[in-house]
Image (cartoon, rainbow, N blue to C red):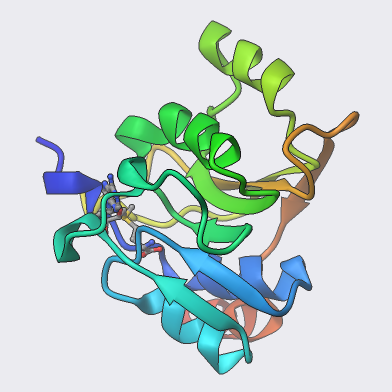
Length: 174
Ligand SMILES: C[S@@+](CC[C@H](N)C(=O)[O-])C[C@H]1O[C@@H](n2cnc3c(N)ncnc32)[C@H](O)[C@@H]1O
């Protein structure tokens, strides 16, 4: 059974890597903040963050205008397609989403890809047990990045863990 509101916090290895790679700055909206791990890391990197979450009364789908036009989050995967459409409808112009690795790999995905093609789509070279099932994870997280609501081309990338995370992983195997 899924957790209420899809509360599955982003593994910190993915938070660090995504923010290392984004190279954005300024103001950002985190509308599905959960336990604030992404908010705290964004603030530590000098972003000004506007945040909320349905658990504290701010329903993303009730916003009629984006408070900030740059959005970074890990949204509820059960509603990720309406999330993407709604974000661009209310004026988001730049967005980075943690998502499932198969987000685009189906007919609905293909159609949404044609509507809102991201600038970059990234697979991770490692898997985290973000669902907390235990054992070896059978699925991985990915990241979609839009520099604009519809890019002409999408660049495919594969990321490895950040230097610090990589060193920790190597130490735990030695
Ligand atoms: C996958 S968790 C990620 C939390 C956090 N962004 C992170 O990176 O760890 C999804 C979050 O979305 C929130 N959420 C679900 N539906 C929402 C909605 N309609 N509006 C705002 N937040 C929502 C949940 O409460 C949960 O905290």
